[in-house]
Length: 72
Image (cartoon, rainbow, N blue to C red; front, side, top):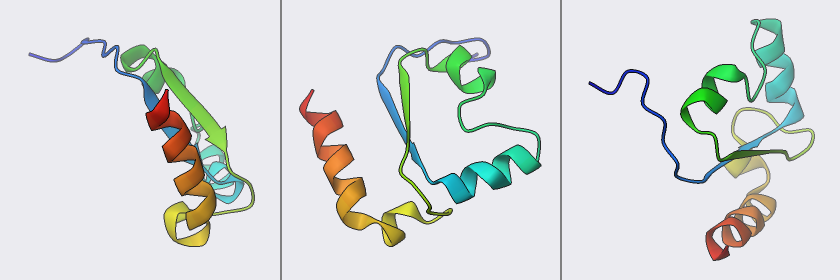
């Protein structure tokens, strides 16, 4: 029922550059066309040299980005 559905909800996608290297190695980028086709209002931000557990590795930076995004 939801196949092809486009969601207009703003989406924040935070990622670390170590995670990007893993995604690229498997043939995908952090914000490939599949994401944008479903979430056209997606905003991605590379948070730096962090891996999969960004919220544990950089909690202050993640919280700052979340507060900014949710305040818009």
